[in-house]
Image (spheres, each protein chain N blue to C red):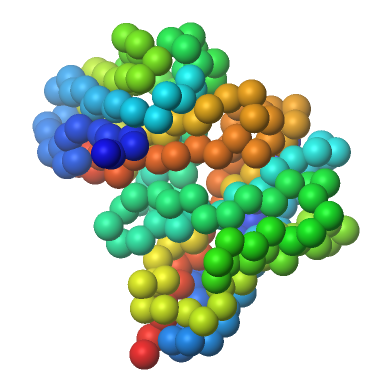
Length: 115
Length: 115
């Protein structure tokens, strides 16, 4: 009965490769997010989607492309991976229109290491 | 622009004691919400507690309470009767009324509970 799940949990790859991270939520939420947590633990939003529509795109390089096939899924595809892409990537979801109190629920994270 | 500041990179507390984790925020928005998340060593982000800027009372959730001082723009997390399992990173976050899609995080405080 996992609420927000991500696959894979760990991803080790070579520079220049293309990789995808998948996210699924079974909470019935309309909005999904991708965050990046760097080596200093700083957490920053990358994208958010509401009902498959892009809402936030935080000046992320266009090598990163989110794809939302339906409102329960938000995948992240990364082209031409660079060393600086090494981080933990978190997916989150929330039920919108709750205003300020809208709580985001996070997945377990995907630890990406680019060699 | 909104900003969250957590000035304590690390804190130690003895089991069964109370501990306060500091969080100050900066926003010109009249209405906003404040959140605390816990990130244990396993990596997941766990929602703990929410405080709205117009809430009359400080939020409480079990052993967690929020010491909200609006004039000082602070929203400190108080953990009572600390347990070894409370050892984790703790993040303060904010959402403001003019940008409800975005949750802004602080840099986190690492809490270590010792026996």
